[in-house]
Length: 470
Image 1 (cartoon, helix red, strand yellow):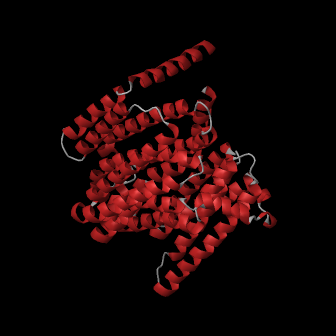
Image 2: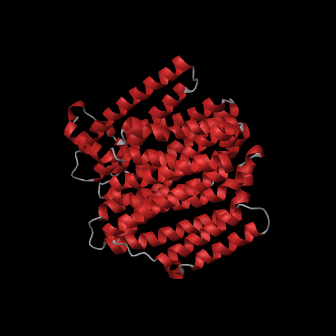
């Protein structure tokens, strides 16, 4: 059992190095974006950037997810897996290239080929980096993330700050980071050794597609839950309001950033331990610590919300702070939903994963169409929160039928109520918007005193060991 936790923690640290930098850099660059771009420009640029998340699963049939999951298995033919995946990626590039050409030449949309370049480089980066992770090049995978982050910073400074390139420069900077890093990964991990035309296998490809195809509606639905509200905001309130709402989503992205790092490691642990005899104890203990950490992160950010927004959101962007509390709450609930979703990947059965996300997406669209015209960004944030909650409940009930996790629901509900209370109070001006979140955060800390004590015991043990070694 100890080795399982050690592997999970070790992989989390390594993936943190590789994943955290790109997302953290994007977060740190917010002052740059909000100082050199108008709210309309930033809104359009981010909408195009986020559009990748809906086009990618459609055009590539979610083959990247299948590539990673199947390449974990040591008895798999990795040459067939990578070759089959590249065929799908190339076909996807051709499809998107055709659509972008029509948009440019027939309708004169000037950002068509910027989008095509971003799509091609993103898909290539995902294939090369996820395959490297799947074949065990974990440390190299982390280094690819570092390279991507550095390239993103340099290209943003040069193209946006020095050259003042606007929306085109914003999109191109991401393309440069993804494209160059994909080439580095392809050669550094010697992935070219696995590519061979005669290794294309239709039987293997069908097996991969049976796993990946349910992921298409799942990913599209997840995108609807996380990003569709921005487009509906654009429709009813204009590009300026959509830009404000998009900027507000950058602070909640911190929670997604931290948990996405853990999820990468957790995906591997869940897949390798799904048939373990002591899986119930392992999975339950991990969830207890994970839910506690998510609640603490959300509570802490709610306290610091206005302070952080004053730093990140310049001039006209600052009013976006009022949308942040409910978006933080939504992100926290979404992270819990993602935890349970990992089990479907582990058993290679994404059917219920798809159903739960589709249900949440339907709820999200319906509530967005009702609430956004009336309440703007507040309506969008509330709709996202409710839809994530629905997904979480569906998955939690279904997974417990398979694994029968040992969950203390009283403690979990208490933590949830405290986070909700803190989020609601943070939406207002005045002293109560600080005092109530601080009180709620203190109660969240005490809600699992045994886990807190274990953490201190581990820390004290390490400190004592360090002193003895010195």
